[in-house]
Length: 210
Image (cartoon, rainbow, N blue to C red; front, side):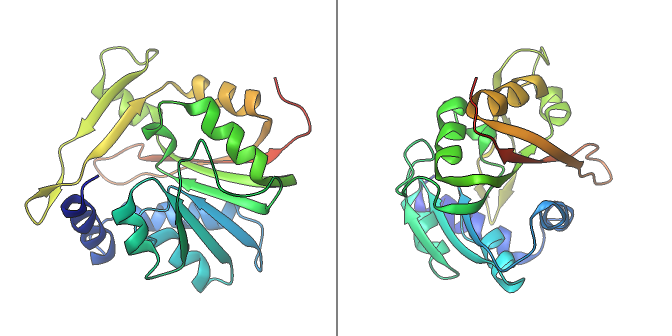
């Protein structure tokens, strides 16, 4: 994401015009263990989620692959430039990892989830938000096949680059299992005209991988 797109995305995210964010945040908070806890936000973007968690008593460190996003995130919390498949932290550093609308943008899904498990403490929690596969599936020819898609949405005349890789729900569930996470709970968010919208999953790190 270029700097102009990053600035446009940040302006949109901070404008309060993203109606999808409030139900997403409510679902994430519901599935998180209570604060105080250290949280790693993978794919933190401009820091919106981390900022909301800090306001609720969590300590947050974010990572993002985009330098422009990291520069924006540090206005709100600690943030580092890093790839989700190569996180710059020691094993079992964080009791909680969150990632919001990131997994569907990552081609190497197994590698990213394996890294998230590595930095999660034993019996720690991952809370992951993805665009609901039933929603992204409307943009592709076959629900059961991975395929890139794009949502044509702009802010201030700049395309926000929304979209990612559609994957069926089973693909995500199997990837969690292979990485060593056991699914615990899920929540679905919805808005008028966008039903369903997001899928929020919580999973606990296990001692076994597949």
